[in-house]
Image (cartoon, rainbow over all chains, first blue to last red; front, side, top):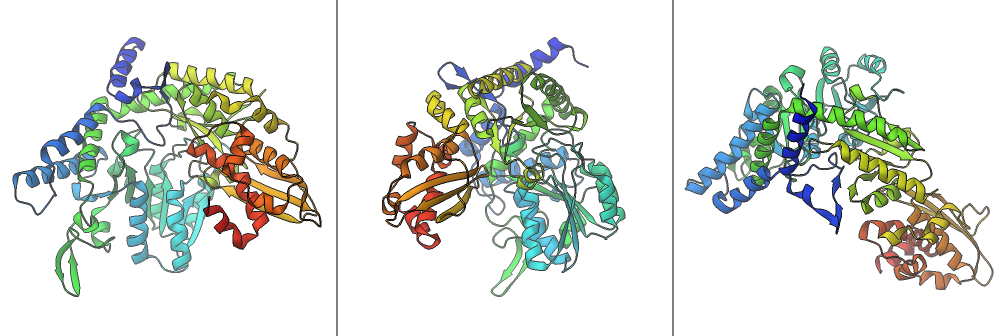
Length: 414
Length: 132
């Protein structure tokens, strides 16, 4: 356990790595960034890696034989190895580059699911999914007649495992669920959900958009079949994400998009797909972004994911305690021990958009709306929430500033 | 930006004059702002000359969208449907007396969108709104 002063000095060092945290949103008003669940800020190391790539090594990857092409290819593949190691994957070709977690889920929906599911087959999801793990399955359901069932969110904001066990008796083909809700902050018991899914004969997929950035996720330990995540939520660039898949599953799947790089051989009327991971990476990929993704993973490794998780746990505990001072504020989410650094709330008599706008006047960046989880908001019969979210660079002082500004909102609307 | 929550806006948000439903009504329409989930319905009563005699809005939304709906409906009482058709973005901003960024502009203009869609009828509404 670190002492308070060790912790403070480490946090000061981390904050100095993120240039944007220095900026003011207007003269004299310093940025308080509490929107990392939407996208994280980027450290100097990531910015420099991408800048260096463009200044010194830019070339198209794979078939080139010149020096730059060799360097660019090596950087692109080195990043893949870093990412694979970060999630504990045994083989780097089990990591497929995509645009983001959404595309990763769609890849599975368009290839694995269309090759393996037929009318009447069951997919189990949860009530707390982001639209990215709902709509691909809605589309599939309309097209193929597969059935969708949902693990309910219990009154304590965790998943109702009893209902899940009952649903499993219907022999689902796939269980796809979030590892951490982007609204409630609920961290799901992924290992148990997967174990039960496998016992029922189903394939298991994790939407890890909110878990991989915030705590150690080990695909071998979880025994998960597919894991989707995005670089931009873990201090990397936008435009790139990854799909982890067990090798045997990926090998058996048909390709996703067709084009260059994903082929081994093309004839006028036919093609033979390439090996993993290239089979799923058609066209020139986001090379600089992959390099940035690798740098992001290296950066998080230097801090340590245990430190990140521990820090966020401290911040959310502190925040849950402090917001009790704000009259009319209702938090949506479970108690701190199963909750990530996400604080979604309503404030009586004030619309979330107005809350967010007034906080912005004090430089505080939060999000207002349904956070791409409309069904979850419908469940609680609220149109929207305000959401403050925390990451490795946030401080207790920032929580204090949030509380001060919320009291101001109350005063304006009283 | 501090002007955004001018007293007039907070007042119309907290104590709207035109909030409610008109049953029966001559014209009604509802729509949402998919960005924030705001939902708005507007009902109108119109006399033989085609002038608006009564108006009401219902639904939920932020202070900007609710205040703009209230101010907008206040302004259409006594206007002909033809005049209502010619209301535009600037008219709403003039009523609110503030300037808005692109995100909040959608909140302010939801009421105009719903009002015009109702007055035009579904078919014509799309054309009318893209013109702006």
